[in-house]
Image (tube, rainbow, N blue to C red; front, side):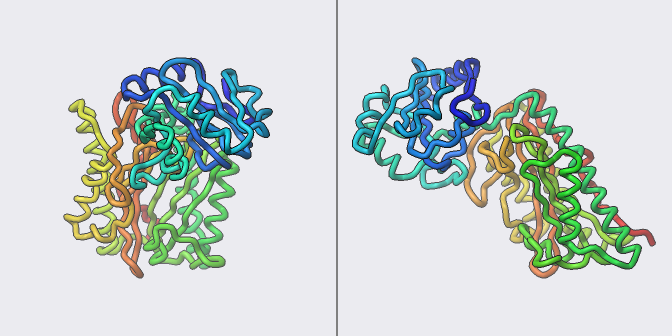
Length: 401
């Protein structure tokens, strides 16, 4: 039961009952979804609405039925909305209508106090001011979004597992392709290999939100490296980072993986030292998640980041770990749930059953090398499941003696 003329939303009768229970637990009078020109992707995803050109507010109350406050121009876009629709014609009517419709005081909205969680800071400050002027107390919807929006369905989990197998296969094929090119004496360039990866992902069914990073040698010291022109040749002795992602459809959860290969028969000592630190930091984070699950204790995003980062600090590489340990994953590659982060933000959201995220420590030494190892994790009913097949224990050695 979606709304408007977009795709299916997350709001149906069963979810509505679940939402009311969550609102009760959080002590909230409702969830107020506000959007304008797709500034709030959470609202669009929950409602399944697309195309509104004017401000709209949708109230999902703790008690009673949902209702939408929409501009008269957009009324036709809400024909499929199964609940009440109230119209306003201009700005002079907007505030009075809101005041009439909002029964209660505390409403969840997609804003983050002090901008601490940018991925959820979607409602403009002026709209928050408007509501406060009406006597409404906007409360961040962070925990609500985690439980309602960020959790994977059983179907999404199964599709994600299959997607992960495809992504890992393409990464391995790409390494083999680079090795064969070196063997022929005509090394492939970073840009050409990236183009091949994207085409191969699409060929194997991962055609939505597809992307990759291919970085050889010092190029990988830039975590978001993009080659100029064709990029550098991937020759013998190159350390090669391949990061790739994608999914089969808009409703699926993507796979997002990073793998490392070396165009040689044995790994240089310095490279091995950095790789082992990154790999061990990844495993330390995963072990921490498993321990907490087995102990029946909650986990918050920042705690995982602290554990992972501490190991790299101990190994002397802490200052080269530039980003958070992991990002939320739902229908978006960088999702709306808890991130494993205590460096870019202090993410104190709790991991709840059904959410997914990446674990991807990395070391980026300018002008020298970059090494990252990324796996995906689903926080399931039986504990954390690493969905990435055969996580890398050693850097792939791609050439023989």
